[in-house]
Image 1 (cartoon, rainbow, N blue to C red):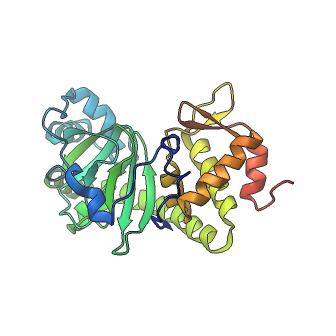
Image 2 (cartoon, rainbow, N blue to C red; image 1 turned 90 degrees about the vertical axis):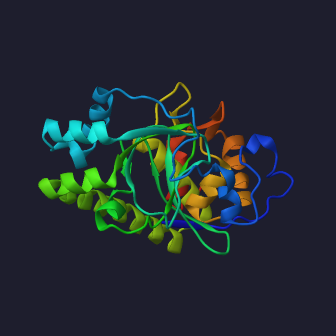
Length: 282
């Protein structure tokens, strides 16, 4: 549960190689035309997904894994699939909770906006992970926004279908509570880190956590599972984008990490772990 401001970038930070878009004057300016109705993609971007594929996508998550096959199939038939471009919003903070969402490809960040234009990045979610379900069950607005980090496809289960299934099978609520508990523990660790760890330790720990969770191994080392902009890294670690750029530049120069086509790869995991533990080398 981490915060960061959107300070203006210096000339070096706005270099295109840093891969983040110029910032608008506030959160609503960033939302702009990229919100499509209730989070639906623009016409022509909605893809048809076979029922069997939808069933597989739902069953892969523990929330639905224990449901009878007929229940999962009914949810799959009722669901829709939308695609999103990077920075598109699946839904906005305060929107009515009309869908439980499952990431089927790409990445989504869950973020809260403040009136001062700062972001609180709550979670990064990848394929197979769900979001928005608790708000649906509680029949309250979404407490945060969901934004695509890269080209992303989301399977969306209507609120009415989810609530009906959960009433017939309370195990859905139990699994959802367990999921929230796991995410809260991660958020607690993040808050603790923000209060006591230096900036470079937070940056290193974030890179390691993302890579170790589901990052692929390349010839160079352990890669992050997705492209991470300097702005997103700053938002996740409670620092400025300038600081994130300076730290990464030092690590790139020292050979601790490399950039492979815009994706960071951890070359020296031991050295980065020492920085994360607050024990940087000379």
